[in-house]
Image 1: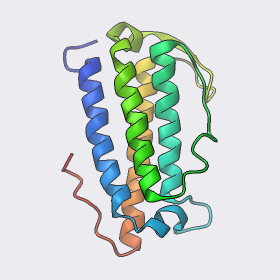
Image 2: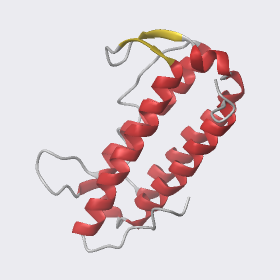
Image 3: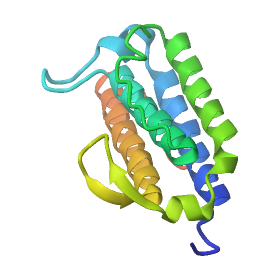
Image 4: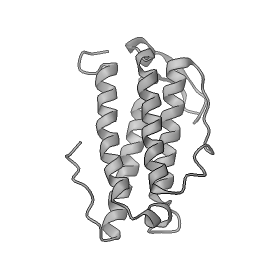
Length: 158
């Protein structure tokens, strides 16, 4: 693992992205956060947030402890902006608590992916996927806000 990408620098990258994602969620009117979707095939932004929280929690716990559990239903009852934002912080706090166990060696370890059927992959690849998934959904949130006539937060402020 290079000096440019260390467990600490990866966590800081994740933190900056989460700060921006939280500002996107905060920009939504509460009702629209949980109900607005510009097309029937799409999901409300809150559902996307719950998805990337599920992925982060499952991957970080698995990488840090070897306990690989993916629970899509854990956040089903979250239906207020305050509760969703609190859950974002709670998941990230659990990540921070487990992070000291995520060493460069653990990031480089290749293990079978039991969640999405991707076969063997490195733990770093899993976390990069989780980060890309959040970024992808945040981009959808930006579009949703613009459709609703709401100016999204500046992208460059982390």
